[in-house]
Amino acid sequence: MDTSNLANEPFHRGAEAELLLSKIDTWRVVIKRRASKKYRRESLDQKIRRERTYAEASLLHEAKVAGVSVPSIMGIEQQTDSIVMTHVEGNVVRDCLDTMNRRNAMRLFESLGSEVGLLHAAGIVHGDLTTSNVVVTPSGQPFIVDFGLSRRSVEAEDRGVDLHLLQRSIAASHLRDTSPLIKAMTRGYGRTAGEKVLRSSLAKAREIARRGRYFAIR
Amino acid sequence: MICLGVESTAHTFGASMVDDDGRVITNVNSTYRPPAGVGIHPRKASEHHAAVSDSIIGKAIRSSEGGQLDPDAIAYSAGPGLGPCLRIGATVSRALASYLGKPLVPVHHGVAHLDIAMSLGHVRDPLAILVSGGHTAILVHVDRRWRVYGETQDITIGNVLDMFAREARLPAPGGASVEKAAKEGHELLNLPYTVKGNDVAYSGLLTAATNLMKQGANLEDVCYSLQEIAFSMLSEAVERSLVQTRRNEVLLAGGVAANSRLKEMIGSIAEDHDASFYPVPIEYSGDCGAQIACSGSLAFRHGVMVAEQDSHVTPRWRMDEVDVPWIPRT
Image (tube, rainbow over all chains, first blue to last red; front, side):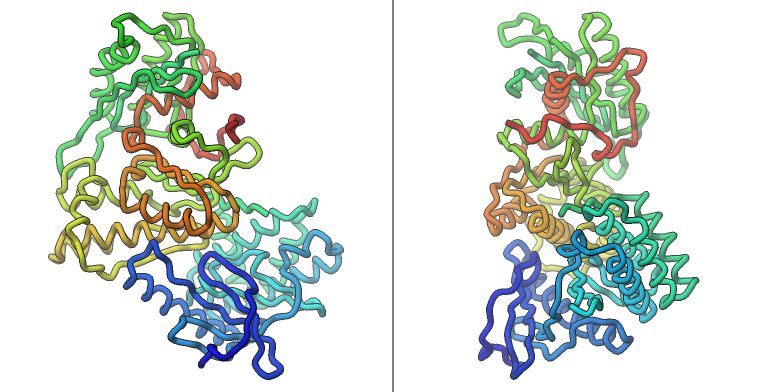
């Protein structure tokens, strides 16, 4: 794929990559371009960027095939370590959670739990599953985005990290009582991942919370 | 106000006098060195501490004119650390406080690493990176406490360097030996790179590097690769944390902050994000009495004291369990 002719505007700059908003025909697309890092040796830097670009694209594709709501891959540009994918219209959950009413929030997290359950049942873990990486569309459907740290894994440990991070980022919102949201999320998760996976993932999430601590800052 | 600080968490017994401007008046330390290939034996280290405590403290309270400095408070490293070592420092400090009739101040060794680095660099409210044998953590101060934003999920970076050096029979301190050997290495070998969100995990890297070395790979190349991978992992987590927390100061403290390659990497990230970079000066990076005196002085001025009968040690004590009301610094 060649993105050099595409008009684009900066959309978001993360620690690892920059996102550009562009258009292909009538499609609104996002170009995710991994920046090179001065602090890493060039060979290591290139290797990490290349590996992650391919891994992210193929995992996004696999997640899509498994039925998870994620952006669709439109192409890869090798020279610039870029992924071109569909743009998901909506709001980042971190930014809209505090103003959402209870019922919508419950419904959102139950669906989000189902999405994560599907992902885990397909043998994929996200690796950075926070409310910053979930976009809710105007119709209320959560989309999981940014698969930059995702991996193939069937380890309860890795699923536990996902659940733990998500629980922590919900708990870090300004809502008064977030435990019903976490319960709703867990309910949705169990429905698609199955009872066995639910139990092992939750047990690991609790273990991880005891072992170390993630502290979410808004 | 002058504070005497007594450090005694692991291999180092130290004593230091620091005034209330954070100026280090004296700083005297003695480090127990195990034979090559062997780690710190807690009992042997504590015997070393007991043997040197008298002369170290004696030197620390002697003024440059030959007279004796009179401390207003006595701070001791109450944890985290090796139990037998901690108990020597606590016992000596307790005795001194009781004899001189001065208040006793318990200090968290990790918090103290950050305090001295902040005092020396005049840092206000940084993203703090603590790298040592006991800690590998990325921290920000929110609402009276240091919060762990990212950390190692298994062993610390100081552990990685020390244990690798031990396996390779390089002399202690392991970090300095690995750094020296790494300067002669050129080939970046294939080693596992594990970042999980803002966290890192090092045990797989240590095993893989040790195996490469035992299989006969060039030691300098293994040291070089070990450093590059371990530090790149941490740097990635640091960059993510910096973007998320939006701090404009980056502090690097702890024993591994002496490593020039790590300083170069973290400094480059700070520069990329328009943050000022404050690595702790090398003479105060490793464990020392001055960090305890510095932290103790701040704590004492914020009313932290402990009665003699309650002056316990805490071998396991997380950074985010300590109230640190003196940050942001003015």
